[in-house]
Length: 437
Image (cartoon, rainbow, N blue to C red):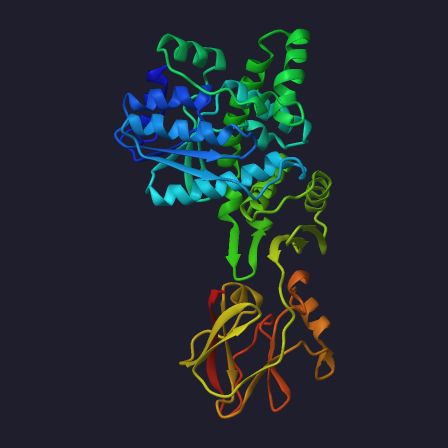
């Protein structure tokens, strides 16, 4: 058992520490603490007190005394903002609060990794829960032995070990542990799974049912690794800009629906939004049918398909009037910080693709005010809409950006390419995005 833990730490070059151990004092974390002490150079122990039970605070102080007697630093933090009797879905709320505390002490201890004591039964419960929550295949990988979460490296060395083996280890070595009664409280999903659901499953399918769920997680973990490699070409075709990302579908050698769906889910996860199953199926169908001007809203992100390009756009504020009287200058506009300066003649704007990269060049009179304002409907006798259609400007970008006026005349639209024809006295200017704010 010690060898399993050591090999896990060596696999990720963590055996020398410092490590932060999440320690409840129960069977799993008590066993992991004992195993880590056998070969870890530097170990910090953190106990999070949930305030669920009256006796829990007394137990927390006892745990502190025990850990300090081993010569290890001990930290305790309490969660008091949640009332388990009054609030619903408290397991998720506690999970969020624990994560914040873990982050705090991860930084405080300069830990290389947060070590958690999830074991085989926890893995089975996690996979079972996600199946009935409607999770995608990528999420059915369950708990990972190694993961990156909110800037932390998280390792779980006990995932291949059953709770029975951990009990035996503690008994053999005469090590004590705590029994948390809330683990058996059927008011909570975790308690219902352990006391009611899994015993019934094992009656119907045998004791191997939990291990079969863990095997499913292992196989799907291999699937996720494989799919990540398969969608590498999608990421290579991805272009990042100030307002999000777009994927040029024309750069892909072919489109496999299953891979495309996996990529979209991964993109949404990286943007911290969730796309519905129905929305994803509709999006993939529209891409395969080469539809244009189709969009799906995934929380704060607009996923917009147009002209064989797939945009992942954050909310873009409508342009407001802004007058520039001195150059060079920097200013905030549409939630971004910009720099405006005069430059020697280089390459005038090729249109929206230059804007997407965060820099456009244009010709204007240096001695006149520059006014950035909302879109106008026409340039002369030609409508902006017609010009956008002629230049194949993607629909999701139309009408959302500034235009430049001098003497109340439109002299530059950053979505449209412009030719190198300057009136006498005009100079070249560059407008570039410095950073988002």
